[in-house]
Length: 230
Image (cartoon, rainbow, N blue to C red; front, side, top):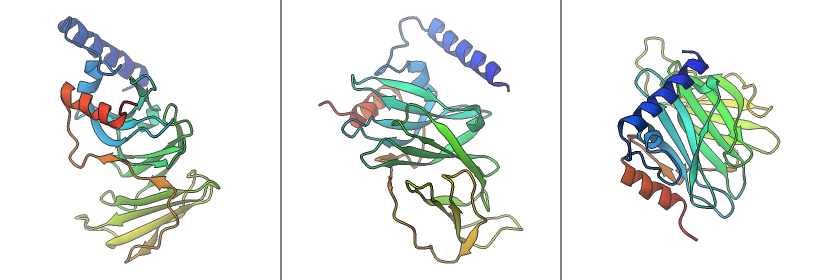
């Protein structure tokens, strides 16, 4: 489906939801109720000083999905950040944030096992695609990701099981980038976990192991917890 068609469909659906239930579609901290109803939280970061709270979400249905981000504002409201079309039909598998800094990284995966790496230098308000990587196996999971100030990145995938007849060896696969994630080395196999470099990226404050939709009250509690008053 073309981007313009998806946008028109989304607007039409949102409009129908609003018109079908006059007076019921209430904003929650600035986010329309229909947006929250279509969003599933995957990772979340609490606000830290001048750095906002973040929620990495999945939006869509069984046929089409989009990874998105909610970013908090100082007035307590939140806004939706939509990402590029290259991330359509992918889902978040990693999120990390520089402790006390404005840089945020995310990794989204397609159904074919391609990882799309994106980053933000302004606390998640805008994003840039940094590179992509075909995993050694669709069953492999992201075990560690690190990127330093010089653009040297390390990605470690862990493969615990793979039912495919031509499955690679179980264990760890190390990838290295020297240009900020634009290009990656061939996979380097290790039976045991490789010694990782210093990790400058902090893990999310909340990880939803069994992602599912939340009702309005649950969204209100989550967003309030991520951006406590004062």
